[in-house]
Image (cartoon, rainbow over all chains, first blue to last red; front, side, top):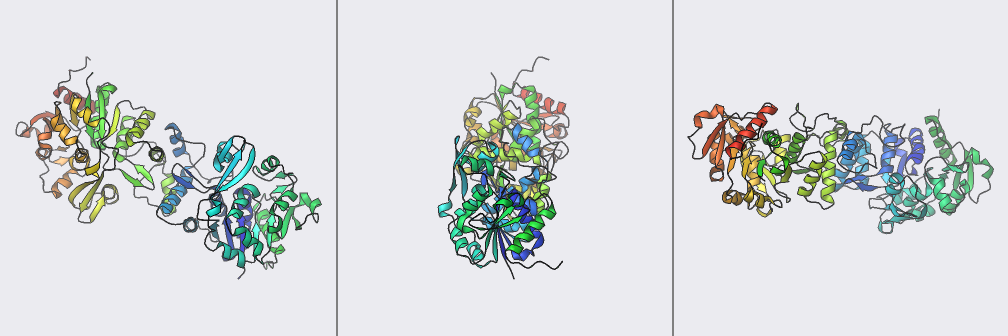
Length: 312
Length: 312
């Protein structure tokens, strides 16, 4: 049996992840998810990237908002505001149930890996979702407004502070999720989804052993560029690159991953970079507007790493 | 300035408490509330009697259900059920906000007394609500089905197990809420509301110092019978009395409070007991169906302890 690993953050990465789940048998896919965005809020363990992926794969995602669940109500949050509680992080009534359940299971002594497996099964998701680590790694943004935890930077301050440095607190002592290093070593290919390299993929790479396992594995590592035509498809990637004095071009992403990757997927808009990078490149339609776009990109990436096309 | 203390549990007691708030200036009333029913559920600190009182006094109570808030939705609970979570304790979406906020404030290091003051102020409640203790006291029901925490007995098992003994875990080392003993010593009267004596008032009396303060205070202590015409107005009081081999008659309640009380308020239905008890008795309409009933009983009780009637 073939086995593919996809490394992903939230929205952008989850699009390709969804495509992969639709073209691969579930047992052939493991989705490795950034937990650097996780935080404790109102006493709840919130895991934004796992949630986005979970809701995307279960068809529950709120397409309009781009986060949270569809068919949502906000009665708890409204009341919390009336009681003087914090409302900058918007938690819908149905979404809350997931955080309550996860938190209760974690407090009962289960690991995040175990809890994620239980909850994704409850939501009917078949491929394995693996948090990068069961230990806390927290993305901290050092900015012109000081040291901000990721959600404070991303949601409360709406990415407005100027990023100076990004820290992954706890990474030095975190252990990779059970089976992660073995999966990297033995899989058929690793796909780095078009998530923010600095905020969503680097935390995964910061977990001790992960970077080395990617360098050591005989499997090809392919990254899909989140930068298309000089700007980010989604989120603050371009803004952060600018603040870190990087040109907001796809080649900077390839440079950032460097020797980790064997193949870099460029959008058609960036075709002019094809063959110009120190890494092998492939040009594809990477902007995923429709479900068909997601499936098509998944097929192109899988074909590039040698998976024979499914009989149609 | 006069000052009155009312000891209360949930629904039954909260009716008289509401009456008292409507006939007394807010600064003249302190409501001392049972916290023996409190429990941790889904990681939240839930204080059912404080909540019932808070919702009753703020006009938010769900009149139809008899617990929780009116204008409620159940989206979180429904989703929690779908995720395999516990749903036997019904938490509405708006109600959840109160528990989230309380829990967050407690985790931030505030005492239950402080948190209750903040939250009742947010809800526009003027009289002081004082939890009996900031330390955990937990009512445990020893039953033919074993040892049950109060909410498991009361809600999950719907009071079906046969009560053998009632324990107030933690009571031996709990400290009365700040100012409680002083208030008992210096107030003009103490009113024991028609709550369950065994499950709602005894926990308050179990807090070290409270019983002695009631015995020592020069202020009159008046109890309103929760048993009318040989049965309980509300809840499992009669069933429990039967299981504890007590006759389900109002005089057994007076005997239970014994030397603690100076006056016992009987319902008109129990008029035949008037003058037959070792404590002074007063006959009144104690079944409170309407808001006017609540106010009227409050006036009768206050007059009995010597408060001059308001000029009408």
